[in-house]
Image 1 (cartoon, rainbow, N blue to C red):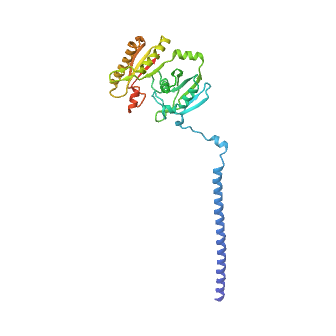
Image 2: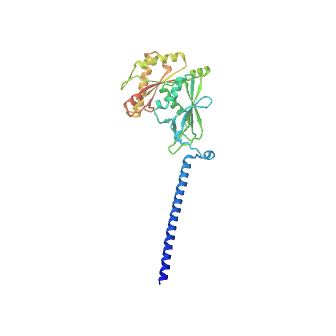
Image 3: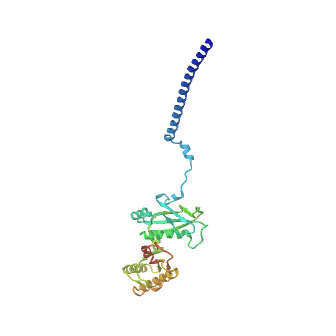
Length: 313
């Protein structure tokens, strides 16, 4: 029995020693493994942050241009981009052109360029699709003329603006919008082109006489324009003028059409009977409320929309 007890105690002692040794070694090994794992992980993270992708991999990554980045590029006569304006887009079957900022801000780069370079012309390349409504002139031409009117209101000489409409397949998004279909090309004016522009140009001028409910009063602005018109007619015996009355949208469309026509007829009467113009060279027309140039929801906008427009052809 005593021998057995001694053997048992020896076994327990060896067991304890072995357990302590193995526990210490496992802990050390586990600690070493954990440290190595963290080290490898940190190395991977550092490499991913600091090491760029190989060039051959970068070249294989497709670069996608968001449609909202469809800029209006202004090109020189060789097609090189001089500068670009902000995003611009069209809407299917609409003859307007849309851009986010106000026209003063949007066209600032272009107007600054034209102020520094006054011997150039601008060709507006305006694309349209065969899937859009058929009209005469085509909808691409109308969009270009819309931009001409916007630039004219900013003081850009309309004589240097022309439109080149281009028919091609256009992809419209789910909102029926399409970007990148309008561009400008700037070319220097030579003497021959100057003469051609002068002989074929259509002149548009907006005048604000004093309006009352039933008639117009010839103020200084109308009198001053009558002098300009007389000089233009004297220099161009074959030219004629359309006098178009425009209104705001207060009242019915029919009433506004009649009101616009009445204003245009009164301006025509004034030019014939007070300024001595040939009646055969003046035609009174009306567009009523159908062609606003400002917001009819404000008093200022309605005042701007109530106007007389001269188009000399």
